[in-house]
Amino acid sequence: MSLDPQQTCETAACASGVLDIHLGAIVANWRKLRSLVASAACAAVIKADAYGTGLVETGGALAAAGCETFFVAVPSEGVALRAKCPSATIYILNGLAAGQGALHLAHRLRPVLGSSAEVAEWRSELRGDVDRGFAALHVDTGMNRLGLSLEDFASLMGASSRKGLGFPLALVMSHFVASEEARHPLNESQMRNFKEARALCPDIPASLANSSGIFLGREAHHDIARPGYALFGGNPTPSSENPMRNVVTLTVPIVQTRIIEQGESVGYNAQWRARQRCRIATLSAGYADGYPRGASVSEARLKAASPIAHAIIAERRCPFVGRISMDLITVDVSDVPESALKRGDPAVLIGAELTVDEVARRADTIGYEVLTRLGRRYERRYRR
Image 1: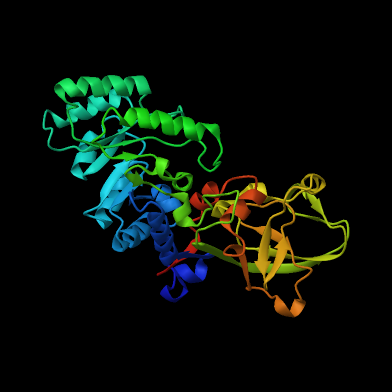
Image 2 (image 1 turned 90 degrees about the vertical axis):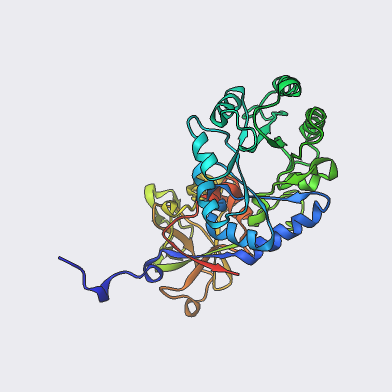
């Protein structure tokens, strides 16, 4: 049986909630970071669908604001961004996946080569045409994840001085391990190692600073900074006040309210029980929408005095109760006047007064995970 066209679901009407994404705030954050690295260029890392905000929308807004260089993780992201930003420089951080050289060349994507095997495959793909196929080299200065060792990089640079790399080298980069901890000893060690590597190719642009690395000072900046998390409102200086503007606001509706008596439980497996008579609101969101299940509230969590997650309803903070389920969250709204709360009213789960970093802390995770898991059942509203 076919549906009556009048009864079909409009996206906005049927969404589980509303995710407001402030593109103007992303641009403002990029401009602020650019001002901090005034002697260097400022790129944008917009991998993982621009940290959950929308790669095409965010990339377009940043390009319009003057951002010329982007970093993404995998070729599919680069292809999507190229369609929106035809003149941008786009680097693929995860390196050259086996057999993907032709795709990179077709869409003018620059692989960040991090192993001898990747270098050899890129050379082979170019077939001696050294005037095309720009690429970057990733030097491992302490992460031990991706990248050429300092010894392998030195050997490659030594060989290239005699016969060339076989492709145009556009950038040399590395990645901080703990730049959000300004006094971590690895920061100095990595900056020293990267300086040593860069001395082998002083005429090639270099990049080391991520969001937090920008705040380590000029020695970390080099020629191009590549912020990611901070662009989207995450705090790059977690030991002090967040200098970035809030970007996302997540609002979901109240589905139902009910009174429960002292001793009654809420949610799966009866993990939370009421200490007194209280009023509970059920919200239309859950872990299927990307809200971290780690924010569930149990008796054990209360006894451990762990931070408790909140929603903001009628300008009041309302604590979570019970387990977060696939599609629903329950909160205690006893402190909200009954006249100020009804079915369908909004509850804020992320926003200026309930930041992504706070949400993450109360869910025993990190803001990066919260952002990149934002669900697709929300209606997404882009603000300029």
